[in-house]
Length: 213
Image (cartoon, rainbow, N blue to C red; front, side, top):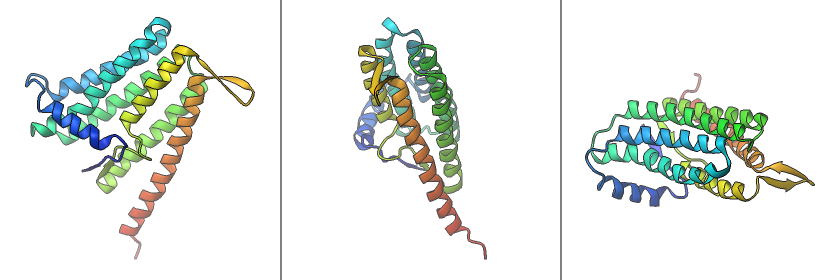
């Protein structure tokens, strides 16, 4: 499986992660990092559900999630202890569960309406399914689209959290909207566009490789 990472921060992030991985204590392995990332993301969801004084803690937990989620595969590759199928499967199962808990936290905390939350999850899982199918069919795992990858999304959520602590609402079209409803609608549009473009591109590629005779 070829990994294709075209995010804006990908090159700088890769150098940083390799630097950290070569200096990480031997007692810390990729499994520890994977499950630390999952626990941190669940903690972010809990912070949004609790709201108020708990919101500031979401930002360091996002950083902890980045540390574990971005570093686990790098540590395995640097130490030559790769488990590609296990790592790919476990990472994606935990990511899917974590994003679900995150959105539940938005809704419980009153930062996002249930309709927008459900629509976001539907769009997100469409992209997850398409990426997984494309990885199997084409052998290429794409980690980013339009220059945006997991790190950029974490940064956007951290900035959104800072704004949320200032004001939960935005004004658009002469009326007030929840800040995260606005952000969620933008994300839904981006996810659906990514799904459509990627599905068409991969479908055309596969059709070209397996034409009917």
